[in-house]
Length: 293
Image 1: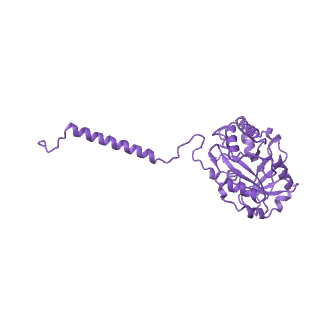
Image 2: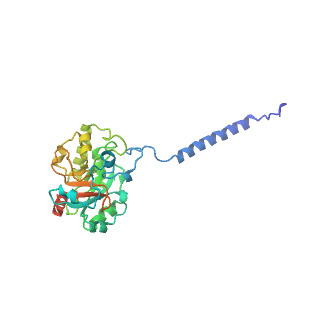
């Protein structure tokens, strides 16, 4: 001990203490890395990814509202009044609905259904089997749809993922063509950062890949406003793809360029059926005809 009372440590003790401190720091850093939530951006996945919230029409109300939507979805008289052809009632669902009571939906008039299968190139609906097979088992004509994220991977990549995870087709009279849900970006810029030409190219890439893999061009789900904004109201898809239009109102309104009529109209986001409410523009035999190709 020194005269002042300060303890003098040997060089060996000082080296041992420094080594112990370094080890503690390294251990703390490792623990911090280990406990950091696994929410960092992953390849092909947008920040804040929430596919369970994304479904056909999930972005529509925020951008377009409900217009003059029927305040009573069970009263379809005013909606039917503007439609020349017989309409067939249907629905679309996603993981948001969970396990669906298909017998009840059929009893309430649903004769067709679209089921979300995939999103981007990494997500599959965990309820897909119950929804896709359940609708079939009660006698509905059903099909699968893909929620597009054009900014995370190519159209071909997402089409291949979709077809491999529920988006196939067979000529059994009970399977609708695969469908592409292309709508407002739930994660950012409306058009996913693509130019109008870039978006048209992405959709064509997706469409052609689905056709190559299934023999059917996809049904296209969209809104007139989004289509006009993000594709420049491109008319070239109308010759191959049936139109599934979303508009929550008592009339279907103006359609995107090239289509003279809609095949399916998603007219409300709630009603007597689980999920979104739809009309097929024709009697049940026309639904069957679309299924048969």
